[in-house]
Amino acid sequence: MVRHYLQLGAVTTLVVVTVGVGHAQELTIEDLRAKANQGAAEAEYSLGQRYANGEGVPQDYAQARPLFERAALQGYAPAEHSLGVLYADGLGGPQDYGLARQWYGRATSQAYALAEYNLGLLYEEGLGGEEDLAEAARLYRLAADQGLARAQKSLAVLYDFGRGVTQNYGEAVIWYRLAAEQGNAEAQFNLGTMYANGQGVAQDYVHAHMWLGLVASGTTGESRELAVRRRDAVATRMTADEIAVAQRLTAAFTPR
Image 1 (tube, rainbow, N blue to C red):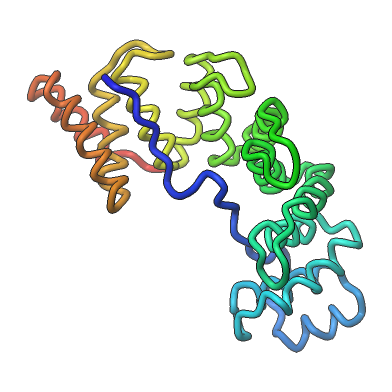
Image 2 (image 1 turned 90 degrees about the vertical axis):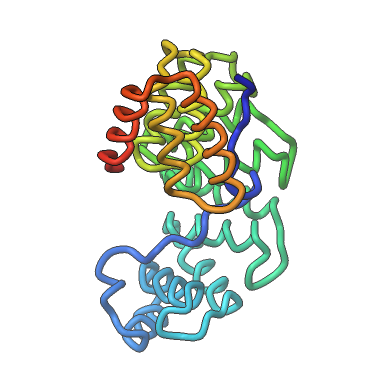
């Protein structure tokens, strides 16, 4: 069976700004503003989040960026990461992948998983500096070890295709599975393909059909069409009983 790698969106798509943390989520805009004016990093960050996400105020990245920067300069990792996102996506000011790398790097020094993942993306794509697939793999691994599904999927892809690491289908299956079990559609598609091809795992059409079926039922547009075609191609090699088992597994699946 021909390999097709499902990619939902462009490879360089970055993680959106994360939601606020802690008790600051429960404060009013006025309370957050007062605390931010006193230099409280969490309040500066959370107020920036409100502006970035348009929660309780009109969405305004130009207001969010300096608030994130004030918190980031105090070493607040979520703000360092979010400021990196704004620089990477050119939100609220000029796009600057070099500065995105710097701010992601500061957050990764505090083991902030989203920053590890996003910095890995920049290294993989050569944005803001030279391409370095080995460094991308290292960063993805750091975030993957913290359970971040998109990092687990990205690390699996590097092992699958031997980019920045020695090609290892077995290792790819491990990381695809961890991401797939969390509901990552790209990982589910690729894990289903690995089962169909018997790459890194014993060939198993039932589990191939199951994982591809999850993508077919959980996505739309071209991603769904590709999953349907792949699932139906697998079904031609299965008995009716095997298809029924696979369909039951698909229906019973609950993301971890």
